[in-house]
Amino acid sequence: MDESKTFNSVEEECCYWKDLARKNHQECLDVKQELDDFTEGSRQLEAELEMSLQQHEKTIRDLKLALNQLQIDNESLRKRMTNTESEYTVLEQKYSLVCEEKDRLKSYTRELEQVNDDLERAHRVVTESVAGFEAMLNQAYEKNALLEIEVDEKEVLQVKLQRLMDETRDLKQELNIRTAPNDSRSFSEKTISDNRQVEIETQTSGAEGINSTPHPMK
Image (cartoon, rainbow, N blue to C red; front, side, top):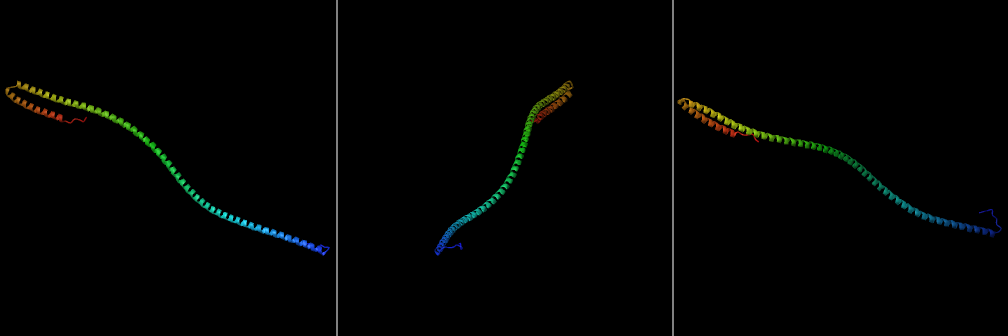
């Protein structure tokens, strides 16, 4: 308000103050309306912020729960990964052992094949040797059979020769007796007869011994 303002009349001053009062009142109403609008806006904003805060708090809680679950899952996955690494290490060791065993079995198989080849060669050699031995044995049997035949023939010839020699001796004695005196002839004839009896018994015993002699197996 301008205090140095001068008025020409009381009515003019009254009009002035009335206008100023109306103006101030209107400004007051405007300010109050603005305050009401601001208050209402603030209330709405506060409600919105409260709702938003609640939503964010709920979101934070959900995120915390999700984070905790993720941490649990992460720990579980870490343990599983550790177990998987351990299992992988064990499987790798087993694989190495299996590879070593496979190589050992391959080597052992090659050795068995070599031994089998050697055994087959040895079997062929033994078979050939057995065949050779059988052939030699058959030849030996044949030779033995021939020798047995020759021995039998030789023994028969020896018996015949002995008999001829005995007959020759007897004939000589008989001839001597025939040319000798009568007394000595009777004694000589008796001696010849006894000798012939002994020869016959000897020949019979010899033949039985020859027939009973065991021959080598053919």
